[in-house]
Amino acid sequence: MVSRGALRAHLLASRLAGPVATSREESLRSYRLFAARDPRVMLGLDPEWAWDERDLIALMADKCGVSGDPGHVSGPDVIDPERTLSGLDAFAERLGDAAGRQAPVLFGTGHPHRLLGFYAELADALSAAGCPVLTPAQGRCVDITTRFGVRTYHLDYVRRVALVREPGAADPAHHAGVHTHSPLPIRVALDGLAEAGLPLPALVVGDHGWVCGAGQLGFDAIGLADTDDPALFVGEAEGRVAVTVPLDDAVRSDYYRPLTRYVINRACLSQ
Image 1 (cartoon, rainbow, N blue to C red):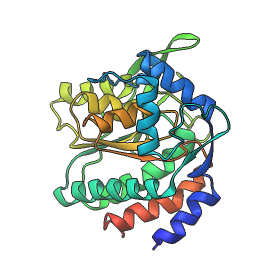
Image 2 (image 1 turned 180 degrees about the vertical axis):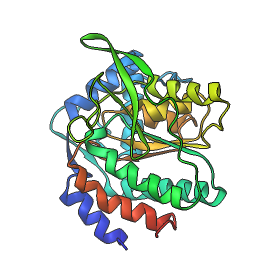
Image 3 (image 1 turned 45 degrees about the horizontal axis):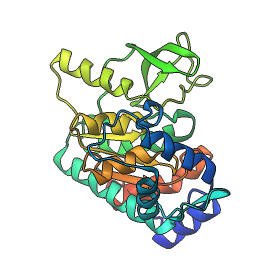
């Protein structure tokens, strides 16, 4: 068992919460781009409401605990660990509900180097509880626009967690996948299920475009997000993302293990 107090201390010590590595400058840049509807930060979300930069600062102050002062423009951003813990509690509740219904679940990450282990252990726990963990459209091509132009990647699964790889990167030990914000991989995965006549996910778990892309299409979606990813928090505010947990999504992968144990215990999924 990981107690709430012990996890709070871990969040601060590992800089998953409290002052984080994401800078205020990075976050404000993302808010400006989001207000301008730049697809690089929309993550597949098409907001119903108008969001300007001040609206986004106020939202992120409420959801994450960052400074709500528009005049605060530099230094490290700050995430309130209590908001992270509350988010993890809600996240665990959704997983527990899926386990109780033995519902089909799809996991996907745009941060495979950091978050693959976190999702994989949750996938194992849900599978043990009787949930089908979906792995559709493996090997399908996904054309993603990057700063270097359109690149073709392949949809793959590691420990039943979806990610995208560069062509020819077949060794998971050396090629864990690429970092992406794109919603296209989740669309390819869902298309694969529909074409095969297989059940669609009752829950999508992940980050970046996996969550926003699924939520935009009407699927129940939960995920993790940093202070420079306002799309997930906007999706939550507008009712298209069920749960967003605020935390630094790019610290060492082993720092997420206590979070996994906490969520598994809270969801009553312990083996």
